[in-house]
Amino acid sequence: MFSLFQNELNRKKSMKRPIMDGELLRLHRLLKEEIKVKFSSKLKLYIIDTGSCNACELELQALFNPLYNVNKVGIEVVYHSYQADIMLLTGLLTENMYPHCRKAYQQLKEPKHVITLGDCPLFHAPFQKSFAIKGEANIHFSTQFHISGCPPEPKGILRGLLKYITSLESVG
Image 1 (cartoon, helix red, strand yellow):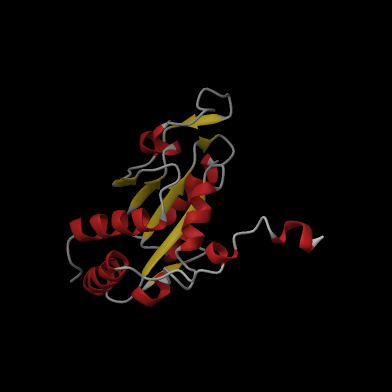
Image 2 (cartoon, rainbow, N blue to C red; image 1 turned 60 degrees about the vertical axis):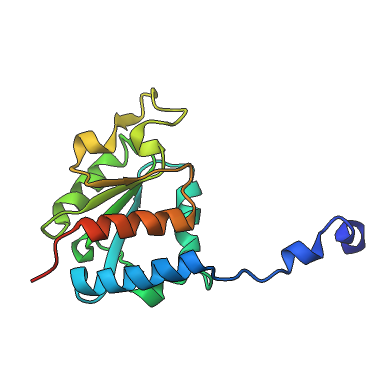
């Protein structure tokens, strides 16, 4: 079976090792500096999929692969909202996810930082008029920033995080 598809595969493309370009190196350096100044150690993200197609989540997962390796710059995912510095929302806000999001929002540390990711939270999605949709995230939560794209590429997410973190006041 493998020999049947072997000619169809472009081995040169699939075996090409991704490289860290200049922009990614610059983003890493700037993020590391800003996180150290603004959060004193690590930037802790609490990610909630409020009803997405999971494309944004796949791009977020890519941030933790060996190429983007955001752990190295001080970004980590936490699994309890009370530990988070920033709550990241993806997808359309559904009726079923609203109570969970509200509870997570209430448990966020002060000041509460909420970022929406992707085009869905802004209602640029096909199912926005469904009975299952609660509404735009910024109506129900105080969102400070939005990272656009469908889905936003990993570098776009890093650019957005850097832009938001840069706009924050320093700690202490």
